[in-house]
Length: 158
Image (cartoon, rainbow, N blue to C red; front, top):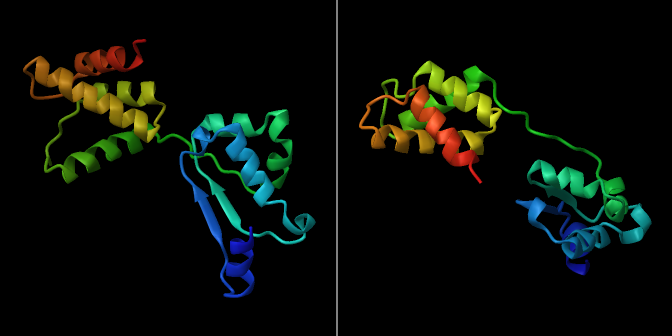
């Protein structure tokens, strides 16, 4: 805490603490974050904190045991999934980065990938990669709906 105060008061710098993958923090770690925010009886914020994580983070913080931390959160934002058009553009952009300018995914394959992933980028990536593998295994040149279905089966299988 002293280091945070020194940065802010002595150097005039705003301190920002960003925690990526915050949904993986233990209960003790979340409690330590709460304690860091508990300086000067909430009259001064010692730092601006960003907790970045999966939707489970929001649900965890809403639990009664984290009520004090939950009350200190001033702004919440959840990134919505992409639209189907955005998913198609997202795939096209990544394919261009990889050196492909032609259409590699059929519209029905893209639609299925979008529907299954709910437009969430990481899920789109996983499904698209598995669909590419299924396409290669079937000795095809275009990712079609059957390859996308095989990818859905592979990714969602337990």
